[in-house]
Image (cartoon, rainbow, N blue to C red; front, top):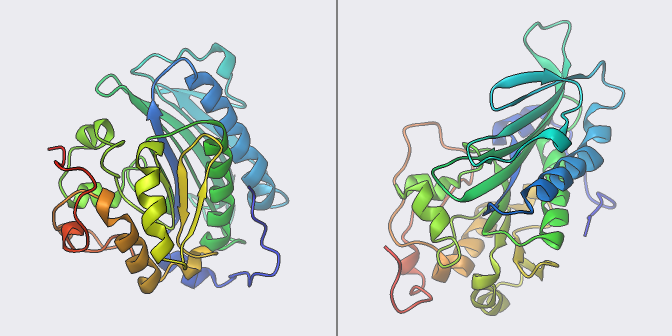
Length: 288
């Protein structure tokens, strides 16, 4: 499902790219016996799609990470990593900028986040490069997510502007508990971005409604979830495209008007409108 850049205009204006902020890819799923397999495949995909374009030929790569706070260097030994519900794994590849101490030319960061509070886990990948725009990197991050959902089902997935451990901006703006959001993820969609992965339980509702929005690209993933892409390229995800996406997903989004954060708003983060103004909830009674 990888989509190349062929024929598309490549964005090289780094000043413009930095204005829209860095992108990240994320998937959420229930913790289970396949968590090791998921993590190994996720890390391998991050390496496969991003390491060459982002890091090759830039400079010496420094590898570091942590296993529940224990720092390590070099390749992480996933075969010895025990996936306890309160352990997480972070792994980074960074090319330092010798001319600007504390800065870097490029980086690739991948992580598994688990905890004992919720029976769910998330896999996150983010990257930065001074020679590639964030738009170009977003396309590579899309390929990581698409490969994962071809193999495994998820309760939510996205490629969009970076958030806190992949938590959807909409969830925070609605003041919804992230634990509630995860537990209700198969009846209430947690958010939306340039790339949104709708869980299989909600796919039919969105798939039917998407016929009214030809500007959106909708396709079933191999594991049954629905991938909704709002624009061929991330720079196509403008205000009009976001409005179409919001209206398409409205029946499966939580009720309530999002409240604006005191933090600097990211471009096209969310729409500050109650989804119930657009469409009724897809179930007779919305979970509370």
